[in-house]
Image (cartoon, rainbow over all chains, first blue to last red):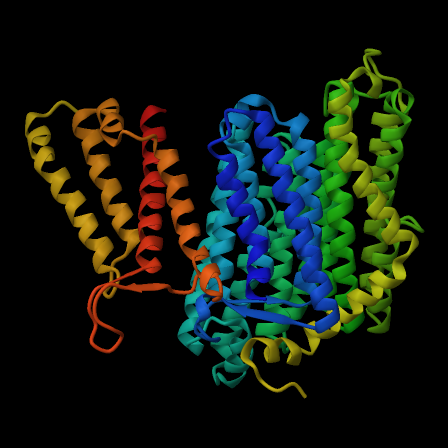
Length: 501
Length: 138
C-alpha cells in the first residue's frame, strides 16, 4: 500500500532520469515521457478508486511512524488533484511532441517537465508540511529551468521576475514552517491539527496564519501578490505555459485549502475575512487585466488570476457547499485553462502570431479547433450547461446561503467580464478574417503533428463536456471531499491511527 | 585569475577540501554532516580550481559533465530507496547488510542510507557545478 502512494512522484522522477541520457534523441525521449505519463495516470486512477472505496489512506516513508517520519496521505481532495495532474501531464506531454523543438529537447525539456510533475504530485500527496516545502522547491527549480530553457530574451526577462517573487514566497514559507515547528514541535499536518489547538498563544498563531496566507498566496497568485504571473507566463513555449497555468498556481491554492482546513481549522477571527477580501479583489483585478489586453496568452494569463479568486472564495466562505464548489471549480478550471493554452498554441501555429490584431480567420480555416475553443472558453465564462456553470452555481449558492449578496454581485460581474474577453478572442481570432489572409487549415500541417496537437485538446474538451453534462457524480464527490476537509477525523485516523468517532 | 600564489596554494587546498568533503560525507552517518553539505564542500573545491586555473582546466579536472553527475546522483539516491522493495518494507526504509557483529555489539555494516547519501553528494556537486560553470561562461 505504501508503495502505491509513493508512485505518483517516483514514476515522474524515474521518467526524468530515463529521459535525461536520451535527450539527444527527441523521438525516444518523447516516447519515454508519454510512457511515464500514462503510467502516472494509471496509478492516480488506482489511488482515486482506492480512496473512493476505502476512505483516506496514509503511508509512512522509511517505516518511521507518524508524527516523526514523512507521511503520505491520500484523501478525496488529494486523489482528485493527483488524477487531474495525471491527465494534464499526459495531454501536455503529447502536445509537447510537436510544440517543443529539438533544440529544447536536447537541453533536457522532458526531464524538467517530469521533475515538475514529480513536484506537483508530491505536493498533493504529502502529509508533512516540511516535505510540502521540499516539493515546492522541486517544482520551483524545474519550473525555472522550463521557463528559461532555450534562453530567448523574453524568456529570461520573465524568468527573473518569476524567480525573484517565488524566492520571496519560499523564504516566507520556510520561516513560517520554522515558527510552527518552534511552537508545536511537529511538522506532521495531522499532528499539527491537534498540537496547534493546544497552543495558548493567539498572537503567534495569528501571525503564522497570515504568514502562510502570504507564502501560499504568492504561489497561488492572489491579489495583490500576483504580478509575477502575467509578467512571465507568456514567455516560454505554449506547452510549458499550459502546464504552468493548469497546475502550478493550483498547487498554491491546494496548499491554502489544506492549511486552512487542517492546520488552522478555526476561523481566527480575521483570516477568513482576509481571504474573502483578497478573493473578491483577485477575481476583479484578474478579469479587468484580461479585458485590457490584446494578446491571446496575456488574456488567458490574467484569467488564471481571476479564476484563482473563485477558488479562494470557496475556501473563505468555509461552508461544505463552498468548499465543494472550490474543489469542483479547481478540476473544471485546470481542464479548461490547460486546454485554452494548448489551443492558443495551435492558433499561433495556424495564424503566425499571438497578437489578436494580427490574426483571424481560424473559424473558417478550421471549425474543429474553433469548436474546442468554444467549449473551453465558454465553460470558463460559466455558460450553461458547460462545467464552469455548475462550478459557479455551487459557489453562488454557497454565498447566498450565507446572505453574502455583494459576493454574488462581484462574482456575476466577473462572470460577465470573463464572457466579454472570451468573446473578444472569439471575435478577433476566430470570426474576423485574417488581416493578411494567411491563416492555414489544420490540413496544411503534417499529419502526425496534427494528431499530436488535436488529441490532447479533444481529450480535455471531452472532460469539460462530461463535467458539464453529467455533473451529478462529480458534485457528489466534491461534497464528500469538502466533508472530509471540514471533518478531519478520518484524516487524523489514517495518519495517527486514532480511533475515528 | 593569473596569480602564482593562488595557483600554488590551490594545488594543496583542492586536495585537502576534497578529502574533507569525503570525511563530512562519512561523518554524516552518525553526526552532523552528510551528503548535502559534503557535496557543497566538494563543489567549492572545483570552484576554487576554476578561479585559479580557469574554466577549461576545472572542467577537464572534473572529467564528467556536471549535468551527468547530478543525474547519476539522483539515480543512485532514488535506487537506494527502492532496495526496500526486495525486503517488502515501505519505500526508503533502511536496509542493513551486516559484515561483522550484530545489532547489540555493533561491528561493520553497509546500509542503503550511505548509498543514498553518496547519491545526494553527487547530485549536489553536479547541480552546483552546473550553475557555476554556466555562470562563468556567460
